Length: 85
Image (cartoon, rainbow, N blue to C red; front, top):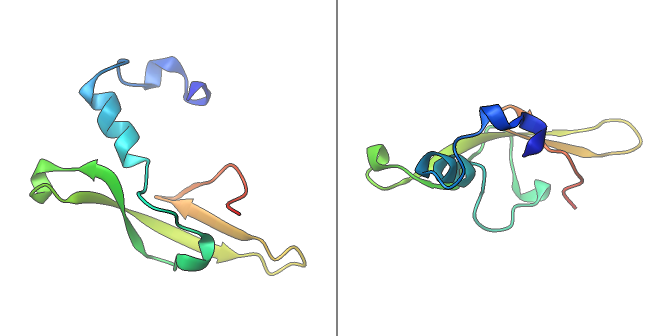
């Protein structure tokens, strides 16, 4: 989290920080093979405005057409840092 700078994070121990973290976690195990372009995945964040339902995040899956054949996954437009294998 230090990559983002301490000033951009909600106060430690706050409900706001808890909500931010819950939004960035997806329950279960999702491999690139299970994901499809424009799919919506539920996050851990449960919202009162959604009648207690979970907030969703859109995903984008692209396959590298080069010899590496790697799959890139983006969540809400943001890429991942490590291999998803």
